[in-house]
Image (cartoon, rainbow, N blue to C red; front, side, top):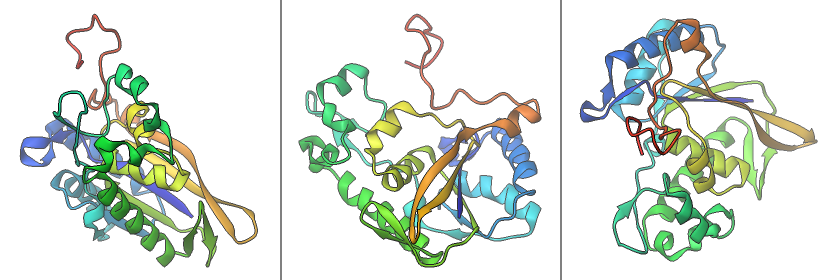
Length: 241
């Protein structure tokens, strides 16, 4: 089985859609995706993801299924030092150093400022959502791997968001989502591809073959958006800090 996660095009957050640049990006993305043999399309309910999916779905004359658990993972914690609201990514490196359990697959949810938030409950909803879907397609979660009920080469495409994709990957890879959210970046309209590996009979795991691929943008002469990145050097004050 192949799983393809696509981040929405360059976002217009005010109108929950995509910008003019985003429209160019999703058109180039549709050029790429129309060549794929896709079994099913799954969509976030958010407008920016729906608009991104629309460009491909219209091109291939298909429809997709929308799931609420594929919406962006915008659930806040309260910073322990200040009580200010914050998402579970984009922490300063010094903060990560003070709370190394954020990197632990077993302990990240036990930190008081996470345990007291909605994050554990919403994280479980996403994990339950992807597991139920994968079981429909022949792979049932069992411990840290997936039991093969019906081995296949189906391709499932998800039009969603950076945050929820990292949450799903953390579940599939048995990792802390904070580590992925903190150290990965997926440009708008980028494509992340996973495959199952059945190296032991009846047991499958997932391996990432490509993360945040933007080759469709380069092919069309469209530069990737800076969105989701931060300043490369501290002195670069024209870039996001």
